[in-house]
Amino acid sequence: MSARGPAKAFLLAAGLGTRLKPLTDATPKCLVPIGGAPVLHWWLVVCARLGVREVLLNTHHLADQVRAFVAARSGGPEVTLFHEPELLGSAGTLAANKDFVRGERDFWVFYADTLIGADLAPLMALRRARGADLALGLFHSPEPSSGGVVELAADGRVLSFEEKPARPRSDLVAAGAYAAGPALLDALPDGPGDLSRDAYPKLMGNACGLVLDPVIDLGTPARYAQAQKEFSRFGFRD
Image (cartoon, rainbow, N blue to C red; front, side):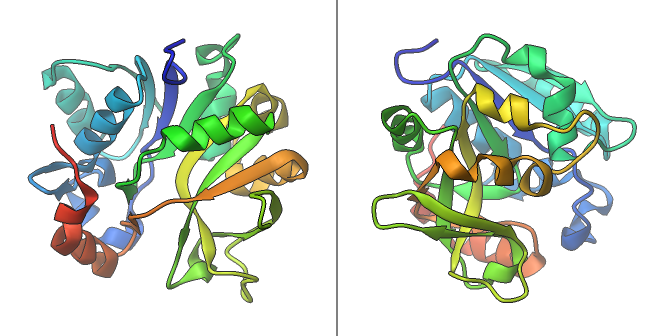
């Protein structure tokens, strides 16, 4: 394990990107361009900065394009592709690949449809300092009911987590970056499932959160356009 943090990360990128249509009709959502490069490129830059050496990337929609992108790139981290002929859901992907992080002290879980400019190292440091099962990266969302809403205590403890509630208890939403330990593997369902629905709630008794900025969920055309306009403030450099 790198002294800076975990050596391994799951990067979840297999979704259909239906909310981004028609952009995703011919392009997988992890390859939509932003700042002159695919979103996936920037996530791999983030992983490299964090000291991640191995990334497991799941594929489904237009998988050949993702495979070609990975084959053409150079430099770290090493990327292992896991193709899902039928989508397994985020929890199903981890459940099918437990051996990827077996024996690791901790690991990252990233969602490729979010753009995060904040340094993520403090998120893992928080998890380790607290001995938490899970540390959630959070952001203040203008549309909290569209994501996983978190109530956060003043000391950073997560008080509640609710996926896409009709009446959000706060505007803090999961940002698509999680610092996880082995307890997450134990919380996974045996088959397909969703992390936010089927796994994360089981860990909320020992979870903490950290507010990140800047963060933009790229899931809709409007937010994707906003990310394009504000890309410079995310501080990405190759």
